[in-house]
Image (cartoon, rainbow, N blue to C red; front, side):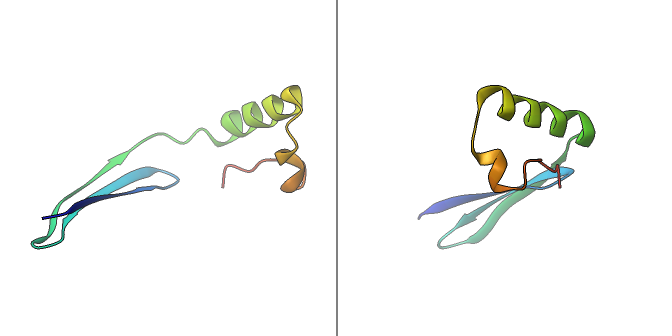
Length: 66
């Protein structure tokens, strides 16, 4: 038996599935979480400029929560 957990973080929720190589899907679950687009995106942008991280330039100098 080999088990694998797959996790998918989306915009409004996280989904998890646990699959066994012999028995297939063992369990799955979903949990919602709040979306703070404006505030979180702004915090990330400010931190990248403050820390001088080049990665912000790779996406046009601004981070989108999308």
